[in-house]
Length: 221
Image (cartoon, rainbow, N blue to C red; front, side):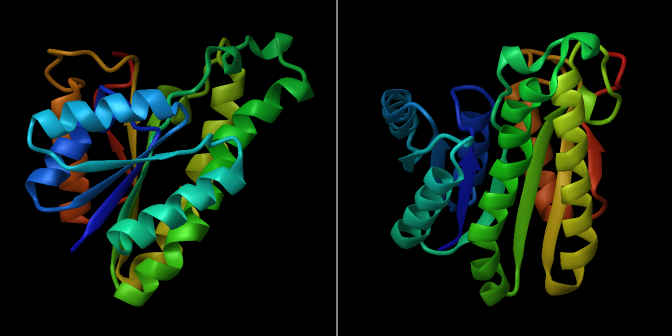
């Protein structure tokens, strides 16, 4: 049985992706910081006929994230698809001239240390399978730096570089690495940024397996 681990799972995009992959027979591992909210999400999905399992972890604590993904792999089998899509904290989005070096610790932990720890945990299993997909989901500042959102602009750029390096390095091993850039907010009912639409986009990226960077919408939207 194939499984997907959704890091940063919540009631919006994470739940929509769980439903989409669940329809295809994937076992679902939800990773998020708050155990209570995880339980609520697992229960809500169960009421819709989607079986998911919660694994609490703070992405800014790599050892917790590694342990959660290890537990997911032992409970559900090898993680074939990893989605890294936690929502950044508001305090990461300071104007560039107000951003000191200590203000970058959180964004770097969130968008660099977390993804690296997650990938390093699941990659050996993907290599044993001879297949896998790693999906990074980022905001628009990953593509165009924003002077009022310095922390995410800097950290997303690093995450993007890491993902692109993985894309180039792992393609020959049957492991596809891709990034979805979502400009602005995820909006229910939006033609391109509704969670259900985005989940379909991510499913398509997993299936089509071409290119690294994809855009959910125009950057000026």
